Length: 448
Ligand code: 5AD
Ligand code: SF4
Image (cartoon, rainbow, N blue to C red):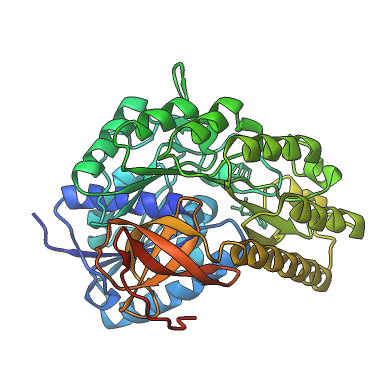
């Protein structure tokens, strides 16, 4: 038994959140305790993201804060986990002298041993990628809640030319359907009401003859009151079988995150995205006709190498054609060792910014129009917790992944309620709770 306290901070995608829960589970098995405060920590870990330079700079800044703590407490062990560990390896120890251990995404089973060695003054690096490690046998350590992340596959084989993920997280590998289903069954027993099946490229999941649609349907059949979500999908692997499953099962949420990245076929080819805009639009038509009222979101990159005005206009055009509910929009960030790195970064930063702003403005207008169109309608919402801004307001999401804010009432976290929308902005809906008996609370307040 050791009573050393671990503090973990997580950056980046949901996969990283899920990985931090795996790390916590492994460390708990070895007797470590956890703290939410850096001040109390004997071991400070940061689980990192390398997707864009900005993400890495944030972590480097944060490590400066860790260094200040270490000067008060020289025995503290500092560890870098995740994608930056994989990408920068020993550079993290050589250049940022304060780091004691560096552990890549496939080596978390070694973490505990490396921490023990670090307390003896030995710096440690474990960054080998694996073709098989999927932590299938580890039950992640989750805090109680309504909604859980369940990682079902790791890595990515797509090699989009802008992306570091295939290098930092390695080749695709899937967990067994059996173990994922068993984990979700346990989550249901513990009171969770929603799971999100996660993978960098989740719909290329495969376990023998089972594909992602089979996994999704098996998960949905566990409990019809359990909401099932998934992310992230690649357009190439978005099969009709999968779309039909989403349409058929009431509790598979009508929401798909389907990154398009650019509206220009020329740029898509340079990105190695393996689809054309025509194919993407056909897919969207199929999705919209099979899953009525579906929520759709996407990722867009502005200023990819060689992008010209006409390519940018094609991106604005696809936003108008699809009318996504929301989008994550980024400026292209060159990443060393990717194919796009060698294409140069020839779109000047001011043009990238201008294009990104045009994309954001257009998407915001579309999101606002869609959300305003929901005013007066009622939706089934899963109550997830109190609103960030006020304890007397709660938040939940619709089936289509829209965030709704509503006043407290005769319900508790984890309940499904019906909410009538009375106002909306581009990101959030505001509603009153409706029960069979009528209004629970009709106070109108502005929360925004
Ligand atoms: N620059 C900008 N955005 C990127 N993404 C991935 N790599 C880069 C990069 N080098 C975006 C993509 C991806 C999302 C997770 O991050 O849009 O879908
Ligand atoms: Fe990166 Fe493309 Fe894989 Fe997504 S599909 S993780 S963008 S390489």
